[in-house]
View 1 (tube, rainbow, N blue to C red):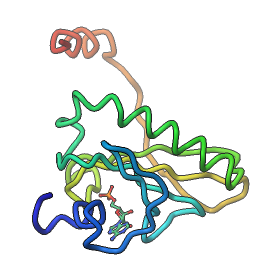
View 2: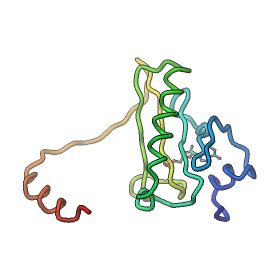
View 3: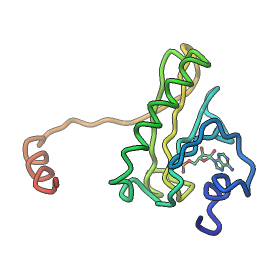
View 4: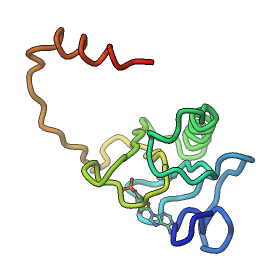
Length: 134
Ligand code: AMP
């Protein structure tokens, strides 16, 4: 538990949340301001702020897939967006790692808008990045 963390508060039962799934390591609850019906956050109990702290959290992926399947069975969306915002520049508002599962329905008006560019120097970039891989 980290003081002043709203997600730690929900995990510890001190702040109300609509919890849909719990394991020893993960809690999933409905987003309070859902983008679509069934929008759910999958959250590790351990307080780490960002994806960079998640290198030993394989269970987070396992439970994300588990929750995604439950949403699919329950609400029957035609698609699903997964989103993880790390850092203010990426739009992170709550500094406790979480994965958004946003069900998508044909004809919904959810907009994910990106301006894309051309990958000009892919070979150089890939080579540079690959040298940092563990
Ligand atoms: P992010 O921008 O990835 O940090 O997203 C934070 C998400 O947490 C937003 O979608 C909020 O709607 C959601 N959120 C914030 N407070 C609560 C809360 N008390 N219960 C459930 N969801 C929350």
